[in-house]
Image (cartoon, rainbow, N blue to C red; front, side, top):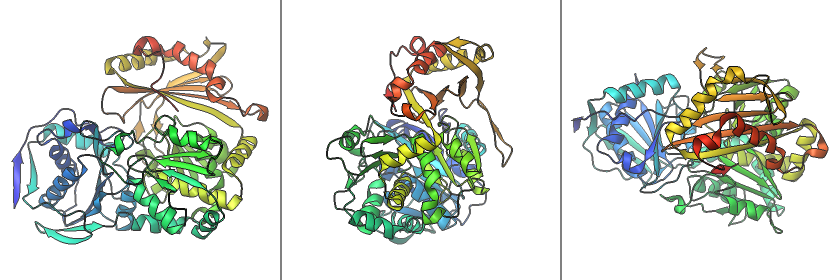
Length: 542
């Protein structure tokens, strides 16, 4: 029943920020998915007879690869696999299942917030036994295995019925199809005051949650409407579709503009939220106000004690380097540590495992805590709801009071998507070459205080991660950060992060792009974005 199949390496299977992501036709090449899955197994030790979790976000090609992964897990000696019913497991739910049942690890099939469909994006990533994404030292080994692979093992088994919960045997291995929502919903109920949230909805509180036809739909439907009593219709686009309904499942102001428009309208609900393809990102919009992801991290941390799961306080806050410094001021006031890490949730894992941080967040709409080892979109929404219920104030009031207490970090991210890789790399190389000459220079009337290529020294294991983004810091606390993203599947995405701190309460209601206009112009002056990329403006502004 076990076959060893000869194969040849592919040269392009280096995992990015969170696994291997390519277009579906790339994954459909002969043995492409099998090669990468086998390379994961070849990079691991000690899993014989152990349990592997398998799930995904329901995007196109998920079901086919799940069948391959089950058959290969059996052939390679796993004793059991746990698979989300219908192939569905949100990324945070998969992390929780790994942790709750103490499994060896898990394979998550997703390209996160990227589009899905026959010619769109697909991804495979491995999560370790702590529930978090494989650390760089492991993904490096996986990549080396992909470059040397000569065969893979697979069991000749009939396709498994993944739509029916229960347990079956396949090639001597147990296959358990699990309810993808139950364990996660139970975890959320242990963290948040569900009674208070039921009262909130019973009082007439109106909410709109857009699941974007992605994986969070079943979770939001069960928790918000079934368990908390939110009116039917609170959750929209809650059925996961292989192509996300033809839409881009990224919860930002471009791809979720319909939600933004509704929340800014005359009959807006009290609170609006959305999540992305695999359920690990969030969009938060109050009636008449958009809460930036960077501000959301800070505000959640400042108010976390209002939720039962965090009433004892926070051990620390961690944020990615490009994320605004708003959380830093919260950490300072709370008297706890603030950790600045590279982009990628895997860098938070060590801090969480060492109990050095409780809440973590990224400007790219990812927020989470020590309850799992992934960012968690629905968790962030529920914590916001818990805070709203406990304080009895609107989202807009909470935001205004936070700015009054801590000051406001005007912040924006400009994305230049699918830039030719050579052009993007030339921009970064040229910028790196002149870092030493930038301090002291004046740009648009602002003086550059320092400039560097961010390197992270992990306080837990001592590892060093270099070239994590170029920072240009100005006198007075403003800054611009340049970074090439590792989450796309074609070309390169140049991300430019612009930030200015404002302590004056009378200047907390400016238009963000207007407040940052001089810094936006300075970023182009410093890096030559237009001349290098040929783009007169960003693809997306958030």
